[in-house]
Amino acid sequence: MSDQKQTDLIHYTDSGALYGKPGLDLLLVETLHCRAVIAKQGAQLLEFRASNREPLLWLSPKALFEPGKSVRGGIPLCLPWFGDNRVDPTRPKHGLVRAKTWELAGVKELPRGEIELVFTYCHGGNALFSTAFLCEVTMILGRELDLQLRLENRGDESAEFSWAWHTYYAVDDVREVEVRGLENCEFLDKTRGLRRFTQEGVLTFPGEVDRVFENAPAQQQIATRAPIESHSENCHSVIAWNPGAELAATLADVGEHYREYVCVEHGNAFANSWQLAPGEMASAALRLAR
Ligand code: TA6
Image 1 (spheres, protein in one colour):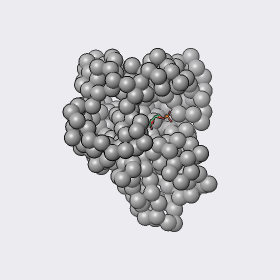
Image 2 (cartoon, rainbow, N blue to C red; image 1 turned 90 degrees about the horizontal axis):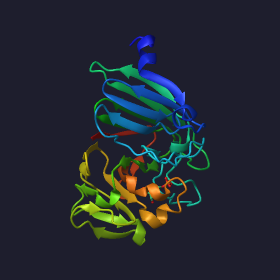
Image 3 (cartoon, rainbow, N blue to C red; image 1 turned 180 degrees about the vertical axis):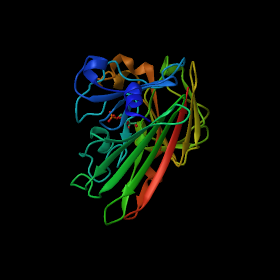
């Protein structure tokens, strides 16, 4: 692809220009297939909309664009630990990489006009997570959205990695949403001390829901107007979350907007966490369509 074409399809911009809130560098991709906005911080997709379709992702109208703080909405990547750190709960929730600036390592236009972006983040090992690792996220932006993750242990001892794509889907009203594809699966309920239950019927969101499904099936459907399909590869955990009205009121960047999204997250956490030996690499993928 020529540089000229590259500049036509990808615009280097920032959160001040796009959202009136300066702070983060952004990429805007506009093609015949889709429109997408990505923050270099966290390699976080903030918006994705296939042409003539409903937006796939929710970005909070109250989102803050502050360096070092994950933006509320889109698809933050939680890694190298998901949720609270099990060794030391005072460490940042959901790991490190969502608040770090990633490198844009590759930009390509594929033969059918999709745009492929490759982002990398290299962790050298520190007091928060002693093992060095390399993380690579590939996004293929077409009529559908394809995400791929490659993670390599670059340290000299075996380490546990837990992670998830913490996807915020845009919905009309979370109280009317059904998530299909988790029926009869066991889950750990974060609102009830992580006790284990079985999902009876489709998953609904009448109030606060925070559930971790281990060994979950590879496909889900979010049934709402313009339903959303997810298909994962080697993502064995699904986490479903919406705070409900009361908890949302305590989250400055959510508030009354909690009805506009549902999180259905894909990755490998809890019993599905990855144990990687020195030099070992693991990968996973997620395809989303609306
Ligand atoms: O994935 C669900 C969850 O772990 C919830 O418990 C909720 O706190 C959410 O993530 C958001 O976390 P954050 O740190 O982004 O506010």
